[in-house]
Amino acid sequence: MGGYASVQLNLENKDSLYSVQEKITPEDYYNHCTGSTPSGSKTCLVPPELTAKVSLYQRVDLSYQNILELPPSLPLTLPHLTCLYVAHNKLAALPPTIHGFLHLQDLDISHNEICELPETFTALANLRKLDVSNNLLSVLPVQIDQLESLEKINVSHNKLEHLPIAMGNLPKLRVLLANKNQLGPAFEQLCTDDSQAEDSSLKLLQHLRSCYHQTQQGEVLASGNMFKRERGSVFDSKILKAGSAQAFFKQIQTQAVNTGNRILTPLVPPPGSTKLDADSLKDALLGLFYGAAIGDALGVFTETMTPNQAEFYYDKDNFLANRFHVDEYRCHYEKGDVTVASNIVISVLDSVISWSGVVDELDYAKKLSQLITLSDKPLISPVLQGVTAKSNFMTDPSCAAKEWNQQKLNNSGTVSDSYCLPAMIGLVIAQFHHLVETQENARRICGATHCAEDNLLAAELFAVCLAKLIKGDNLEESLGCIREVVEERRHSNAAENNNNTIARNSPLKTLETLSDCVNIYKAKGYQDAVLTAVLKGRNASIESQAVGAVLGLHIGFINLPSHWINFVQPAFRKHLDKKMNALFDVMAIP
Image 1 (cartoon, rainbow, N blue to C red):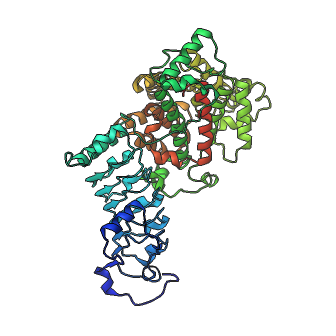
Image 2 (cartoon, rainbow, N blue to C red; image 1 turned 90 degrees about the vertical axis):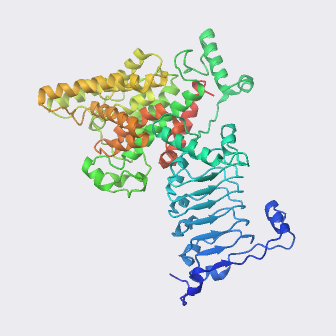
Image 3 (cartoon, one colour; image 1 turned 135 degrees about the vertical axis):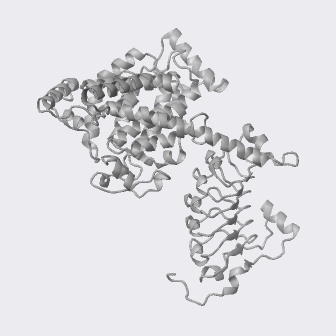
């Protein structure tokens, strides 16, 4: 045990309760609950007999001791601990080593000053009963469903604004106390804990389980993810304070139509251009861009692998816990990194915002060239490698693309890949309500790098699908044209080659994966759909990005898996948040 004293273990300790607690009087209890500790009371440390040497205690009670912190080494000196009671102390946090209590079943940390549980907390695989009531918690771990043994939990009297929908995925949970929080009126009746509502815990659990199941199907919005909206100067208005976000949004729309004044809000959608209200539109767009980033970051795990290799190195269940396999490609990445595909999305979005919705090929070529030059990550698109290296790319990108394409055709080389698709994610915002213009913009920007007909067709189909979803069309309507073209190509290939598969390097292959993964989403939910694309390997980042974008747009940001959002590189998330706030300003979305 390292530097700990080597002494003979006292076997009598195994079955006894360690406690330094004296009898608690009503006055003592009142003082502890109200914080009015009598003068002369001292803060205490965990007793040295528990920290200086290994002991066999399975149950330890350190309640009512004014303890400020638990030593990080405590799991080493209490390796057999099953019950720990540290209620009514002054703990502000738990040590990150808390998961070292491998056998812990009962934990009482109520009546402390804990603001947040450590990330390692959900590794307490044997925890059955948790009392964290009367603390200062504002959130619970988003991966709380990893506490698979949990049967009872008390989170009452905290500052929780929502309960993780993952609580509905705790298989053994049968008692949940959550009253006296800040959950809002929707939960007040469910959380009521009085003599007239004996089944409130059961009703709350049933509600969470129903929500979890529906969320996996994309049917409801989970109250999980929150986006910090930082409004620009256009919102320094009494109008915003006087009414709802939707009322303000409609007023700006009407003003833009009646006066033609779009100086501050050049991308405000015309009235009737989308079935989504202001809040739903904001959530959908956040889902689009964050879903794309999630798919890209997860795709890094398997990019360039064969499906068999992907299956060998990674398990689908609890995917992020997999060891990140490092090879010639992945040695350039760390977990959570995004590829050039996500940076292309941001570059195009930046152009759309800067040019007030105008999509300019020269600006795109300039940004793309800078991005590739400055990137320290490998670029695996042969088309982008070849076209951006042409001397005339910055001055006439479409001409450079055609020249490169012809050269490759003459040499029987590959002339298409799926790297024309990321730009469509940023591009579609410009004129989503005008499908003909969306198609024209898609072909024009795609043609600046990828001029093969498969690329132009795939870019157009993908952009229109996204535009229809933003307009508020349902998923099947939005995906209809993609499904038709994919099926037609399959039949065509079967007739010509007796093989109904689409060529791997064709961007239509990515759209085929998208179509297949939407079917999986309908049966098993968002996470299964995205991971199916990831575990295909090959062009995993692009294909998972496309799946994540479409389904993220469909279910909304608030319904994305929180642990996947947090997995994406923090610096990229910060950059994306900044761009999204700028986008919402020019769209007049409060």
